[in-house]
Length: 172
Length: 176
Image (cartoon, rainbow over all chains, first blue to last red; front, top):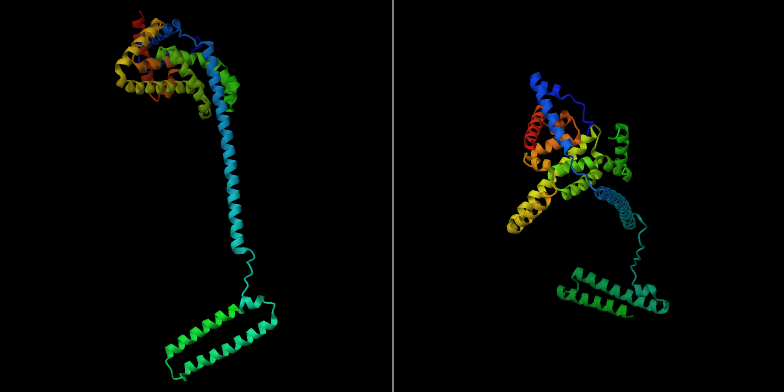
């Protein structure tokens, strides 16, 4: 410990004390520190120094692993975000912007539409048309009050008749 | 002591995470820091642990060293490590109050075995108050000027000068 800092203790003390006192105090400090030099502290064992170095290396490796982990997590998080965004975008496109499904709509009964027996279909159509015409006439009569009967009963009869026609028709 | 250019290179290496640079740092400062810890604790085993803690802490803290006196920064960190140890010791002491009898007998045994190894200076140093002892050791082992120590401790230089002067004077009287 011979290369101690080169500050001038006397000058330092002279900022607070007179020259004589400053010289004495500086000397007291030098003598005090001389005692510390004369009684050196024990040195650490070579084993301790080696152990400290090993601890430092372990810490460095731990930090490296931690940094690598952080990078991997960040990359994984970014990739997951992209995947989620892509999935959501595809779903949204399918719902809104993509070609819609063709919806089959028909005023004709499906059974009739799909049937290949044209002759039977013609007879059915003829009966259906006749019945519709009959119902139309009855409805007109009701509107005009021509049959002179009870309107509520007439309506119920008409409804029943319509249901029967519907049922019969679908039964073929 | 390493030349300032060499030291700057070593510190740069440490900042880059080079194990060799840290090992060099341990070689340069390990003994001085050990002496500092030993004179404050009077215990080799604790000093071994604190030395390890200090250099492991340097691995995480070296990035915060922004230049200036490295010794000042290093010993400030060492001082923090020592005070952390003291706080832990106080915490442990509180925990031990519940097991007072066992603790007392254990401490007595420890003191006896330590006492066999403690030198005269260590015995007299323990008669100084903790702050003065720490200040004297900081001055001696860090080799910092009074101006740097005062700056580190955020106190006027006259205060630092006066504390070290009184502490060393008392130590001289005790040693005579």
